[in-house]
Length: 127
Image 1 (tube, rainbow, N blue to C red):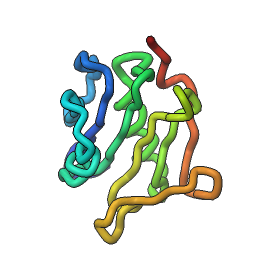
Image 2: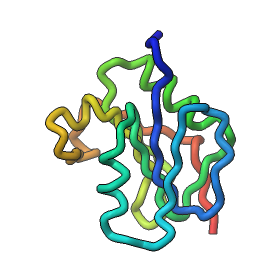
Image 3: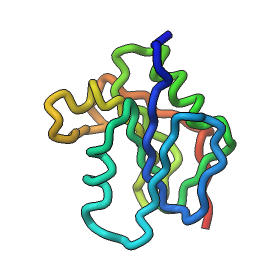
């Protein structure tokens, strides 16, 4: 167990604040639609970075806890993606220290990446 709680930052497209019980969670909503939003938020300090696309929402208030638990259980895991998708967009989470070793962002091919888990049942569609 780590000495600090894993910090999670999530970008979220729903205008309501998600009801997640995980304590060290920051949620950012791109209200003004600026193009630099993802880059700005990704640059913030965190252990896990996630993106929830428009049309997907958390299935319950423990989703972030479950995602952190999976990352904690598998040391080499870089990415978690949802099987649920809207218009080809899936929920996506990465462990920044593994996915972005040079600090330049990440580029992942979900078809060939070996350190990736695809989940189902954590997200639901809406709209």
